[in-house]
Length: 218
Image (tube, one colour):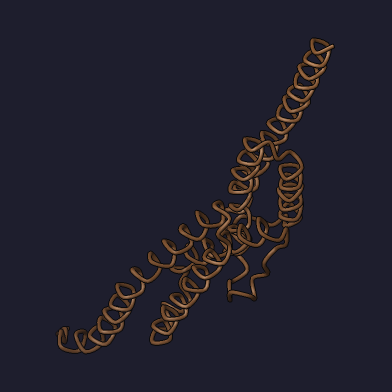
């Protein structure tokens, strides 16, 4: 039987063209995703410096970048169904919640920045680590009440995420991130307890020193 190689080439050529187009879109989108992630990292840094207006602005810049990336995806069914931007969306979810929790003690819903459900959940889980950092900053500044409020937000976040008892195939990486968050909450609770005890001890020592000075004056 004679094989018609030209026939096979005619079949494969449009498939190759389609995949080359997908690759071209991917190469255009990857730098956009990286830039969005960079904006989110800067936003978190601003939030820890209590520069909340700048932090919020950076999140919206990251959102605009991903909007541009999604416009590129419209040219390809395959890329539309990919999870290439999930990492960047996860960073937006983390940064947005870090900013709102540190500045107002409120959570940011996914709809506010157009974040898909799965990366929103994993991004929220990552926010627990940034809240721990804020708790430690508050303890170093002797702001015990602030530290206690932030710990309660960490616990509330973890409790909410633990209600998503689904297989990893449905919510990728959430279970692992919850395990990490649980460990961070437990460590932070211990740090806060030690910090409160140290604060009380310092207060008692200052009170003792004050009374001693008063006795000497008499």
